[in-house]
Structure formats: structure tokens, C-alpha cells
Length: 414
Image (cartoon, rainbow, N blue to C red):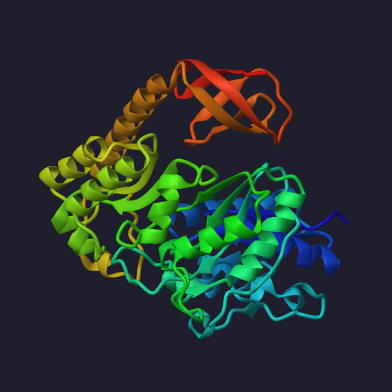
């Protein structure tokens, strides 16, 4: 029988949890098992997961298929009803070794995620096939954006104590990882449930102090409404914190942001972007943007297009609006799918133009590159870089010599 296999969809938190699951499955002797760790952020993410499950069953008819993750947590019977699926387990259950024992034969093992009060303190050894490692510091979300179903898959916000974060980071650095990414569902809410209620910035400062051998640190997506003063001070003065932030912007129109139940408006984004550039002039900003939200007019959409240039956004994650049953936005007047796709394509073109301008500006400048694959890596600003053959996993000094499409071409500096 073959070793257990993990198929991961969605976010970096899922990637971290997949490594916990891999360890449990290996330790409990789950040979021939394939575990699908699903995502529910869009209907397309769920469609891809179901398609992959059906394909796997055709290719491996004797496999024992377990489905977990946010999609399974939110709607377990949908996956249990698939003839290809042997078992469905929840987001809390997937992190318990007992869930992978042969004696556990319940077809559905999914409990109420809202009853979970702590972020489970698991330590992992690394990430299969990756040179950048993720560290979970937070899980769940207390907010209820009208388009989002994820709180019902992840539960309420809960934070990992700094001691556990530091132990995980130290373990990964000792295993050769040159860059770590702190990740969570609502990273900006870190610490509110812990004693003394430390902020995210205080946690980052503490981590960098107790793990001085950590070379590069990144943060996953941040809520622009909550970036604390300690974090801003680190952005301004800590060279190990990379000059790249990704913001959960979602839209550039005030009425759409209000209907999304976001906690910021257009002016807030523009002001924050200007402040971050004052703190760190070379910072690169990314953003999540939703195209075609219900009731979005042409003028509202153009406000989102314009905020890309107005805020100097470079790395865009563009999502065509995806109706999620059970969310308030699902009851709002929707737009034709063709129009939603058209607007998403337009936003992606705007994003590609922004990347080209940013990369052109980097030509001739020194770059610090984490080599992820032979000859390919990411700069401190998260720009994709292609350079002469360098050992995978190393952080190397390089000089950008030209742009090739959406990639920087660079030469390693001796």
C-alpha cells in the first residue's frame, strides 16, 4: 500500500494544517489513504475539490478517501453523499491523531466549530517541496462580512501563544527554512483572546527577539482596519520583516464596502497606503479585490479599478464574486455571471500593468532572493525572480537586469 497522500486546496493555513495531518496519518499507519483538505472561500474552490475527488477515485479505485477542511466543515453531508468519499471529518477533528486510526469508522465526524476555544498547539517539521514555511498564529474570525462563509468553517477567533509560535519558528529555521510566513484567518485580530491581549505587532517583535537566527519574516493577509502601532514601528525599522504587505481591501467603493460590512472605507485605504510608504518608502502592497459584488454599478467598479493606482497596489488577488448560500450577500441582487467575469478580467489586466511598472522600477536595483526552485525565487518585495542556477532554499544577493513579462531577470552577486 502507498503512503498517505494529502491534497490541499486554499489558504496558507490549510497548507500548515496539511502538514499536521500528514504527521498524524503517517504515525497512525494510514497507508492507501488520500486526504482532501478543502477550501470554501468560493464556489469554484469547492467545484475543483469535488472534481479532484472524483478523478482520484477513477485513478485509484482502492484508495481510502477522507475529506476535511472548510467545505467539509460547513456542509459535511454534501461530501458524505459523494459515492467516492469514505469519510468526512471536521476542521477540529482533522488535527487529532485519533481521527486517522483504523478503529475510527464513523462516516461523518464533524462537531460544532463554534465550540472550539483554542488554537491547537501543533509543531511540524517542515513543508514537503517548499522552501518557504508557514507558521499558524491565529485561527477563526469574529467578523461577519456579508460575502464570506469562512467563519462557519473556522469558528471564532483564537490565537496561538507566543511561546508556541517561537518554538515552531525555531524548529523550522533549524531545518533550513530561510523565510517564514505568519498566517491565520484574521491575522490582524491576533491576541485578543490571550492573557494580556498582545497585539500582532507585539507578537512579531517578540518572535524576532527570541529567534534571532530567523532571516526573513512575512505576514499573510491583514485587515487594513487593524494595523497596530507596534507593527507599524516594525515595518519602519525592522529589516528582517519583508517590505511587502497584503491587505484585505476587497473593493474601492464606499457603498460596496458598506454592503460588504467591511470596517474600512476608500479614504482609509488611501491614507494607510500613504502612511506605510512614509514608514518604508520601498514597500510593495498587495490586495484582495472582489469583482462584481451584488449591486455593483459601473461607477462603483471603476472606483475599485482606480484604487489600484491610487493606493499603489501591486500584487492583486482578484476574485470574481462567488455566491455563498447562507451569507447576507446571497440575498442581494446579483449581477450576470458574464459581467462578473468581464470585470474580474479587467481588474487582472490592471494588476498585470501594475506589476510591470513595479518590476521596471526594480531593474538595476539590488535584490535579496529566496530561491524556491532551481533558478527561480522571490525577492524581498515578493517579486518573482529568475536567475542563474543557485541552490534551492538559499537567500542570495542579486541584481535585477531586466524584466521578462511578469518576472525579474537577475544575476547573483558574489
